[in-house]
Image (cartoon, rainbow, N blue to C red; front, side):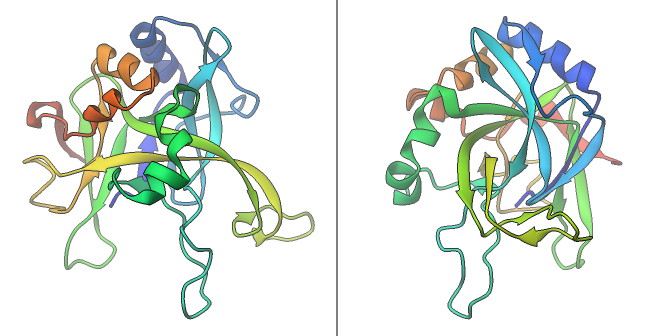
Length: 224
């Protein structure tokens, strides 16, 4: 499961999105200081979503709320960063509107993503697309609660506190022949074709057919 990725130049991301989506992409309220960086689970990353008659690129928190805030031992559960089983009640019922409605669709730009190497501890393999720009098929939602780590005034580290956040996650699928030798369980759903990007952003059940692995010619091992 992908819990770490990087994104490249914001200018390149906006240019690629403008060309693919056929609508103007503007900077959102939180994206003014956006720069190339890495994104890990439960940290902030850029997404592209609908805004008015066009689109915006803004910074949201990576990870949907878990099915239960704490496990049987009282430990905090991690956020849901990857979405695989779209037939589960968690998505068909509890989070249905976020999965199907166009206003909650988003594209998550990336330059490379990591998958853990089995049997080698925390070692990762990195992959990137052979296209100029790749996007994960994502969804976002508003959320308010106290189970997430947020900046608290006077504290050096983030604390668990009541907060209103905008969250995102992205779809995964079975791995293609490039990713499978490294990570046989899954890979992110990657969109590079402009028609697929527009289709995903239109919402609806039919667009869920895009939950499929990217062709092997579209991806390669990276040195990120």
